[in-house]
Length: 117
Length: 108
Image 1 (cartoon, each protein chain N blue to C red):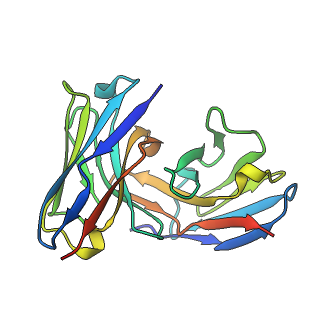
Image 2: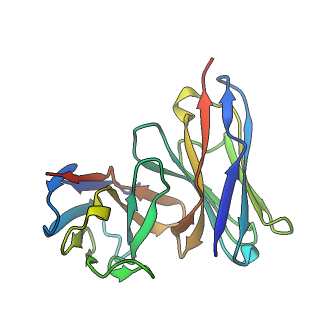
Image 3: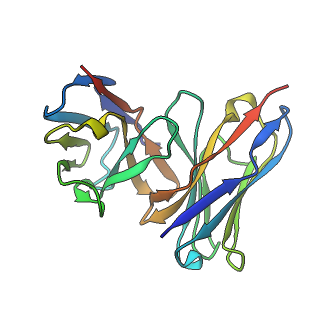
């Protein structure tokens, strides 16, 4: 069955960087687009970024554009989110999700990113 | 950007009740709307996609309807496992995916 396992979260100072990973299994990773979605503590869901199956197109929420980069390595069945210039408001659980025609379908369990001095 | 609203923000109901949640988009999104269920500490789970298509494995007591700017999620007979927070999400385009603020369904 589909499995998505996020890693790389932790505590980082404002202005710092972090790279999240999402290891995929149970489906043909190279055939599907992938999303990152985040959820601040006690808050709702916020879509962050999307990458097409072959990496040819990437889209970002305005709140992270220019600071975050989504990428993938289809040979390793892994999705990434490089996060730079982190702010306190980026504190959240970050989920990766398999795409279903622009709709986040299967989700991982999430990894917590805390931006704090 | 397309904005999403949901009503009510909180809903108190009893087991067996019929429950309806409304989601509105700031502009037409055709039928590009999904509904998710989220329980505390867990990832969201897709229930409905394309406004009214039931995701595989989701109980038939869940149904979705609507198009354009107004949508509803209905639970025909609320079960103990259904107490959770429900989010709508528009996916009209890959560069503008937006979730609603959520509706918490709790026990009356």
